[in-house]
Length: 151
Image (cartoon, rainbow, N blue to C red):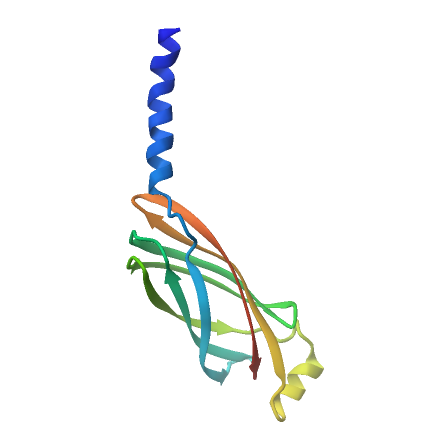
């Protein structure tokens, strides 16, 4: 019986230490600030944007990866897969520059033509996750942000 306790004690200790290192609250995607909409090389728009996040935790962390699908009117139009190594301060807002090459073929040719003449409003949704490192432990936070943009 003592032999089993001796084996379980280190495992319980590791679980407690790992649990204490995990952030208590999720990092929040506050907004996507689209700075510029440029024509892309293939006729699809290129969005230059800045993602504004907030870390509500009292511990700093390092942003390692952004993995987001961009949906235009509910259809997948782009994927953001950026590998980073950016320091995130505790209880602070931080921003990450993004370049998003949209593929409006998925949305439809008619919508694309309409957007070129007069600008159409699109519902753009950012769905995915970010990966951070906190005290040496990887943590993944889900993201879901939606806004309406005139392209």
